[in-house]
Amino acid sequence: MPFPSEIIREHRIDGTYSLVLKKEDLKSLYPRMFRYKLALLENGKIVAQFRTNTYEYTPVIPIKAESVAYEYFEYWTERITAGHEKFVDYLKRQERLRKHVYKSVPSPGNDAVIIQGSSRPDGNCAVMASWIMEKLLSMGMKPAVFYPSYMYILPCTGCYQCYNYGRCVFIDDMAGLYGAVKGATFAAICSPVYTNTVPAPLKAVFDRFQAYHALNALSKTKHSASGLLLSTAGRKGMDNFSHVVPVADAFMAISGIKKRGQVLVDNLDQVYDVRSIPGLRGIIEKKVDECLK
Image (cartoon, rainbow, N blue to C red):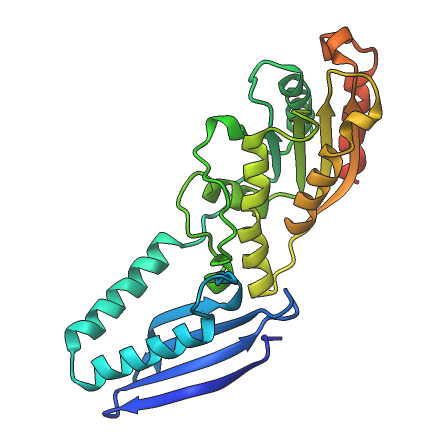
């Protein structure tokens, strides 16, 4: 079912072009959220668009989504009515460019994802991630492994522009991660405890999945994968994971990943090497089996 909407402004130009401005109710996603969609149609076909939503505008900004949408409508109407074909061509080029730049990145052919959140490629999290990878390979699966610390990932700015087209405005390495998660039936998150939470590069990944949530929410697509959380802490005690777990859980929730298990390994300042913990690899492999049942 589409979101409730109404046409709030419409104008026809010389029998060829028409402009339609719609107000779309997205309150089912967020309180007070409305999206304004301006479309230029040529012989009934959309050739250019502009979208904005109420969450883009902070309280201190004097302009709001509705006024911006009306201004765009009036400006486009004025330019096109005056016979500015170059302006129409410009809008068409911008639309083609938007579709090209923000096109969906297909799955790389994987059916599992491992996000190794530690900045150390040879640390304890990396060891546990390798155990999962070897287990998945032995089961005939095709895991894709990502290392956020070695990826170009810009931090989320909370602009909410992803709720206009279902795409993040940033162009970086996140596109491949979105595609990999979309094609996965299993996802594992490996994270050490850094200052009581996850490392900054991994948190950037989590935050940027707001755009993935926007894509699925706007298209009303439901994607489900089984999730497993692995985390390590130097200090002794399960309370050291009290912030890592809810942060990872929130990420899985907005990503369509259903958490099926977790393995939390503490006291590594003393133990030093996870490979020296009797039975740990078997425990992790069993958790993978449980997730994939």
